[in-house]
Image (tube, rainbow, N blue to C red; front, side, top):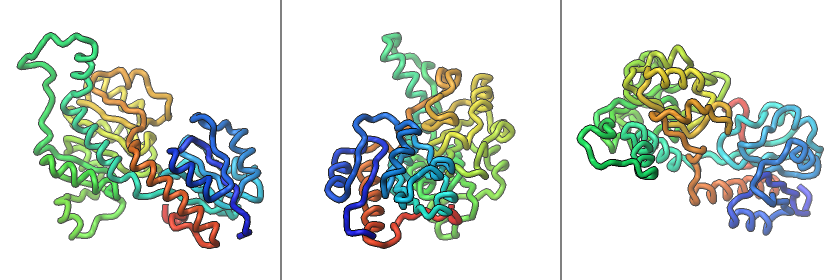
Length: 328
């Protein structure tokens, strides 16, 4: 690598300590406001920098990479998910891609647990009544939810976040079940007292709560499609803190509206910020604005990983969190 400082472009506002550290180490261009770059702005940035630091709001597709300048050698993503980046095209063009895995595991698991509680105990409905001033007083039959102790939790995707959720849910007395591409080792299953289901359909049909914790890949697109959602018990709820496109949002909306499912807790959406109004307005649905990783600690740690990846690359080594297409 050349001795001069790397030219780094950051596409969104990051926590101030992260931006200050980037300025200390690199020739960095920061975003003045916290709005996504236009595609034209992204392409212009990629034509004149060594390193691009995008977020999940930036579409780094084949067309974009094809228009990037020859200087661009590293895309240091601020976040763990990389489904918005065409990893294969980047590799063909000699551009490395890194991410920030493992940082928000605890935060996302916390949010999944919060959504399970929020839906089953009808917390937003109670909050709404208090905020509006419509609460007439305590009643033996008002806001009746369900006890989560003893309920069966089916985790789709038993990776870092799935395991962290299992640990939390077990503390609440839930029974842990899971479906995964590969079965966990017996000692890990024993650690979480988790029951493995090879057949996802069979698991879905028997759970009280389904939590979606798998990454977005071609194989997981609409994994919870209309047919599979209909297998769920009418008293069951579904929670999604992974990627919106794993769940068929239109089918989910129809079933919730028809009373064929008890509820849903969502932090991610199939169409990004274009949330389904009919879904958002249902009383048995808790919707959050993609807050799963929104902790000060998590966002600072994400920034630290980005900096380490860039610094390692600048020193002539492979970034420790390099994303390899074959391992996705």
